[in-house]
Image: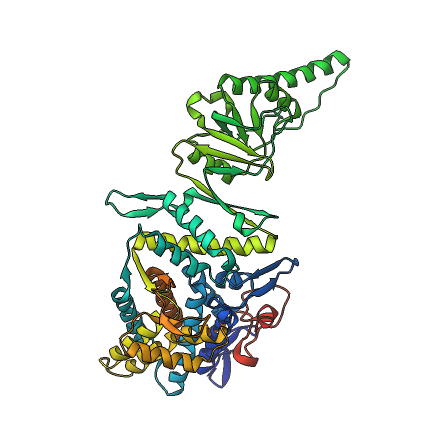
Length: 554
């Protein structure tokens, strides 16, 4: 509570329930919260990173080492911690991968900034230095990055494999990398200026359990995981006219409740006959369109199923809306919401084939732009983690195709950036120079953590890496499997330049945002979760309202 003496009486400015943390306490509070988030995901970094098991309040279990998934699933209700989580979400949206790297660097920046604050360096000077270092780092990344031929499939496979390594896909990463590169090539088009544009909206991912990962496949077209609605219907159709329907093939019901008094059994029969006529009319409308296959988003009446089977029409009901939208691109069809106004022009054309073993329909269109990646795994947990890894790999391959630049992985770029930023710091005057040097030190967190997670000595590794880069080997990185320092680019450990730029920029901006806060004023507790918990006051460890959800991860 803030008070001010006026004529001998205290004037109450804030309510009794409010909380306020100021100056050094506010900085300690924020930095502690941000670092706690970074520490929670640091052990997942790299090919040798460990996984986290996350159990939500409903008992659902998620096993992953994907940074953004971990942070989103954790029960975090601290406002500063949520700001750091936004770094991971932004990194995921903009680059598709590198979320753990971005959050870890942000945490290390704040750790080093705390040391500078202890030396009485003003936050404004630190913020300016971090901003200058971030801008210089982006320029250096662009200078170091290798321009790549986007038609080089070997390189793109290396990018995909680097992204997937450590995410439960190592055994089959070569097979999956081939599928990913081919999938990206299928959905890549050129814009008016001749640049490559990867449209991942035309790439659908389906999962299936009970099979090995090596049996994953890429299909030109879409997949419908449904059965025919009637046993007497055909199960496949080649060169078929396909109707995508967003209207139930059922008896129309009134919008209001009505009561009808029936005094004669013949009247009841008339009602039943009329319902049957309605269903016949709907089926006849479909038959008049010369449709061979119907994918219906809604229900199909049992009697309508019988009539459709008599007409030799293959029908599927309760198809997902997303599947229909994808199929509309695959077979070049319109989604019909009113059968009465439908025309032959609304139909699509393609082949519909039934896989009885997997109980799937494969739908392929002529010159289809859309493709489906069918991922298979032994259990739901395996498939879920596989899908997360493949999604990240798809994003980074797409970024490499669009951007045309790549970097050596294994900590090589971070060590080189740190060396160049230290040289740059010599040209910076004032206390900002110390902030630039702190920024350089923070980047070296990545190779140190890669070594730690692989069971190697992080200090020896960093010394060896620095020595290699001082000798001019820009692409010298850590082989976490052997512990050797080698040219990681030639070894196939390749990362997209855009992802690294985004990680450095997001981390710096998040750290600066936290450092700029010197006063925290809350109307209640400092938790963003206003549930039944009354706790959350800043206290032990400066974590305040992190709650039990965070404690379980530390």
